[in-house]
Length: 307
Image 1 (tube, helix red, strand yellow):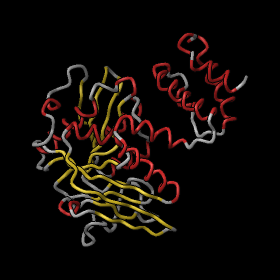
Image 2 (cartoon, helix red, strand yellow):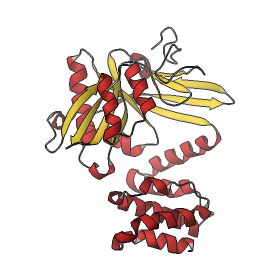
Image 3 (cartoon, rainbow, N blue to C red):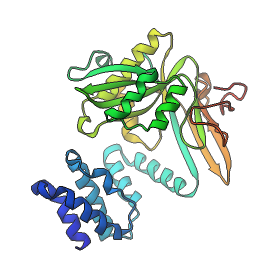
């Protein structure tokens, strides 16, 4: 079967659902010849994700027809249509840097009761939410959460907790919260003021997007941390993640500063804008033997303190 035939089979799978399992196998085998970084196996047996699959395959077909085009160009064009020319230029600049070196630009932001969209403070009309903490977090693994057992054990070690939403027995959305430094990758951990609780790793099942579950979850978490004496939530979004920036702005997050992180030849460079100091916001290098649960380290914003 040719690449085009495999593409056609999957693109029209909604008309022939009976061949769904076979189609995945055929497409995975044949489209592998395109040498495009892709993972079709994540769509296996997930007929509910069909629109995403078709969009994904459309991108593969575009790349097949125009192999000389840089994949980032298509994303930049889409970004320009949705968020404007400036956003597209920012995306291309970040993509260019990330191809050469480790590079992140983090927009630090806070959410408080004074800024939040008060509509999200009401209970969700369709789905039930709850806060899960302690050993009960382990039960989320068996309910469709996107977290691994190792992640859960590290979260328990930090006394992190999750705000989750259910559709019956099915977990459809989750967000994680911590009062301690949390790794953002293998090189760095985030640090922040003790007056705030850090929000990270938001997840909403693809079938439930558009229900504002992530926003309602953060609103519930905000109410909980304020009752516990905190000023609010603190988080970050990378500067080229325009969808998340727009979503956070809609909810009521306010950006206070920027943290630029660069690694070249094993050396790290961190720069922060003045607004970060008030919130003690920045990153610190993780030690090679430091577990994911966090540990002593120097904060890039406030070297005199550890988080």
